Length: 318
Ligand code: NAD
Image (cartoon, rainbow, N blue to C red; front, side, top):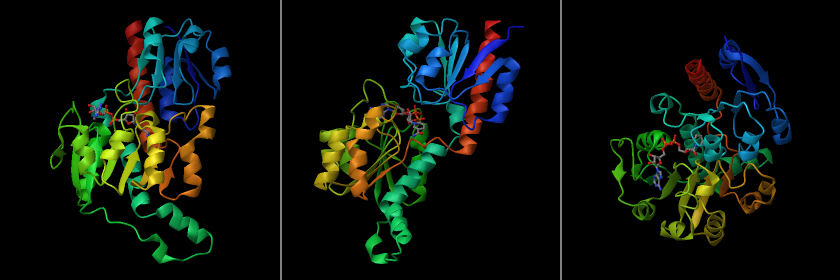
């Protein structure tokens, strides 16, 4: 029986149950590797398991002559050069399209809701004030969600769950999606993005990053939102034009934003992010470090699911 050489290059807190499945398939190395270490370790590797730390590009594929599969427990695949994978005959196994399974994974939708509440109720700055010895109720008067309109850009798996939370909170929920899998009951359909942006008090973004969605929400689109609107983005940083968002916050056109994702979040350029600089001195921008999917339950479930998917793939090769 073939013993596959499996490298898990981002094994921090990896599910023991998923690791057990991998060990039945072959020889498993669990090594937290930076890019240099990764490139040096790929010579004999059949299967590479990644999260989001490394860009899996042509250089990586060229360094892995035996590679058969890259496994990523994500739906977004912008950290993997899919054309280079195809060119090298490597299959990319991911959560993309695993609709049934993904319905049971709420982590990113729950974080979206946490960010929304943190923004409307000023929770981070209120907590910070308490830590500094202040107990000042009046400074932190927020806004109700009930009665407001929530605009969901991208009514896919996460968008659907967020829509349900919005309805449960008594919000009017609208969505725009040119190709939804299904339509959530109680959600008003917008015929284009401009209509959605024009009608929503709060916009939450749930589209994948690809050539047609990079920079999708820019100066023009933010300008279509009513003054005083809020923006939440837990999809990918490059979907929103950073400079346009900053300008909308600085001018006061947007009352606030909460982002779990930033452009350049995996590069050294992150240090120069104008949004991080702005957030240091303005409490109406809340930032989290791409933790949407990062709950113990969701990560364990997805790692086991992906290990089983890998197992089926490897069996199909023998
Ligand atoms: P999904 O594929 O189920 O849904 C995406 C939806 O966006 C689809 O219905 C699609 O038709 C729609 N869409 C595409 N282009 C659009 C456009 N121009 N305007 C409006 N709608 C458009 O994906 P999902 O599982 O809901 O996840 C959405 C994205 O969230 C992922 O692609 C990923 O990048 C991101 N994500 C982030 C985290 C995190 O940790 N923050 C975790 C999981 C997923």
